Image (tube, rainbow, N blue to C red; front, side, top):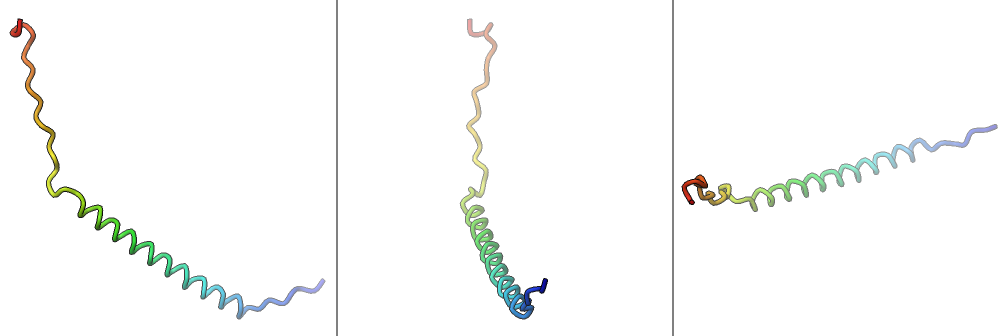
Length: 64
């Protein structure tokens, strides 16, 4: 049985083109992630919000 001819130049060119597309997609994803992270950090309040202090409980024997 004879083997089919393999166009190695075509395969190499396709691989190079696909690597270019993959790298462009990766770069776009990293830029989007950085932008969203910056937005998330900017949306955070600069000082943590503290819950109001709960009134202290007195013992029941004093309230009777």
